[in-house]
Length: 271
Image (cartoon, rainbow, N blue to C red; front, side):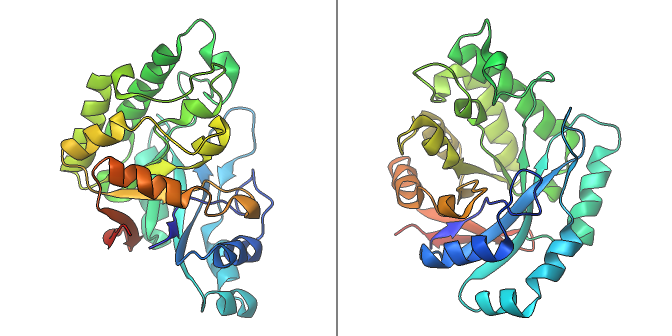
């Protein structure tokens, strides 16, 4: 199964890629399934609201041209939900998921103590390990306290700071925050949730690899649910790093990749 489970389109404020271009690129790259995961994050400071219009996207997908493309590939409906510590936000996300009958939701964190780890200023005065530990502590708290397990499928890009890391060594390692990672992994496993391998990290680092110590630990603790997503905002990045990510997962002890339908995981043998 070759499935890209993290991509953005013109329905995300930070992408101009049309639905047709993203779907056609997935077909051209030999993918069997994709999931559209446009942004929903209504309180990012200083930027337009990251609120995907899911009904409009669903309507667009029913157009004759896009319906024709979907005879060649499975297109699932999803969203990337930015985790925010706001009153009533959990109920807002529950409404988003249920009213739009989503197949899949990525719970992600783009802010840590009010700063975006994508930018080098986040790392000022911190070692790489300190920056990752701070981010993971925030992420774990948000996952455990701001969103119901019923309303998300996987936690996205737990190594997100690697994208903007100003150091030569950008990789997340289990030893950076072992207690925090164990807490996050155990929470996900108990509640039947998973992790993603986000291959945009490969592009940011300039090499298609990860330090897989944290993947091995997740698997050792009993983690099984895992998706691969390119985080593509433009057609040329759709499906990026699929083979490399699958090989890393096998090296870490995984035998299956996961897709989703109506928020339920479907397991596919890694081949």
